[in-house]
Image (cartoon, rainbow, N blue to C red):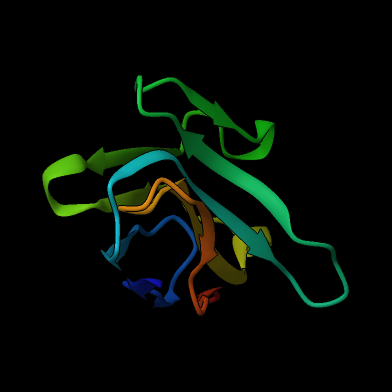
Length: 120
């Protein structure tokens, strides 16, 4: 099994910053894609930003220039640096990690979610 543990959410004022972390552990041979998604009340889950093993990134237009994704392969960890936060960024943020286990079986795991609230 592959487990994901997220941290870093919380309450922040508009214009503030937060850094989310997601560490993967368990039977992992190789991690390919890592990403962050979010879901606000009444909305569907949407991609925020993702990063491949070749460090190619894909992001939502709404976070361009404000959010930055990065990964530490030695720690099997993905980060999301969020700057200039807006009220519309308020949501539960989920990390997603996909790759292969030691037996070369694919995995696609989700974190438990961390709440980000942007409010004055």
